[in-house]
Image (spheres, rainbow, N blue to C red):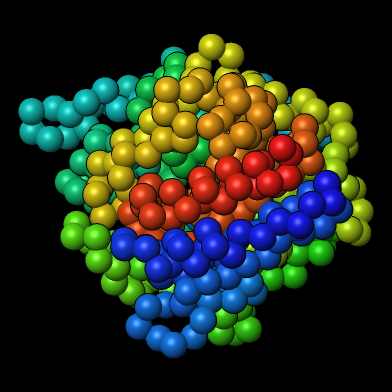
Length: 391
């Protein structure tokens, strides 16, 4: 893969278009190193600092793949049984009940689940958890019963009822936050410490963590809200400092350059710059569809300020592996069937193509999720990667 790849035009067009994005960082890698690193626009619209390739982002749900990787390490070591009750490792998850609607007086109607949640349920988003911005029941619990938002990074936020019995279907939610609690229960350490020792150090990831250092904050990309009229406004947003819970589903900050090291590890059968993170046979197992006949569905945006209706490759079949969405068919961008990928709430997107040894990451800080300007730019970036490098 010796071709020169440059997609500065995609980034600059994404910034200059109307509606556009305030600023973006995008990178592309093969198994050996980055093929492209680009930045365009501003870190924050109301300030003069330009977006740079070392800008720091709230990574949101791109955190999930790192947590899943830490869980797979424990599976390798025989310390985590994916089929055992998750309450064996994180006892509080065993207290949760299923919500079967609401009583006439507005009280939740609760019952015991038909079976216990397993760690495998958590990895596959089939345990019964949702998010209030994708689910009307959780939205109502937040509005009427003061169920704390997941971004409060609190134990109380985790203690939400199940939307259905474990294993019944795929629903995207706080499963991986709970998986982080499982990892902490096994390791006896906070999740950030586990990541640092077992993933970040072997990969040379020096600028990723649950808490912003002063050096990271100085390069932090600002958050933006797009109004109904399409206009972007810079907003003050920061996840809690010194969080009560290290949220394995969304809590990390980091640079795109650091995340590319993680993507390369997945392209290289678990090898990092400074050591092996996962065994090749673990990765070959993990990347398979483990949902069976269940499928990934469209994410309905029930809180318009946080998410639009969103879906990768509508009309195509999509499954879930141990850590990632799997596209079951070749995508319109050229991404092959069986490739891995996912996203983060503030319109961050990535993919990992182990077959061709190619992966990319596109980072913006815009709400709501599924922003047409950012998502469209990302798809153009991915499509250009395939048309330029694999034609």
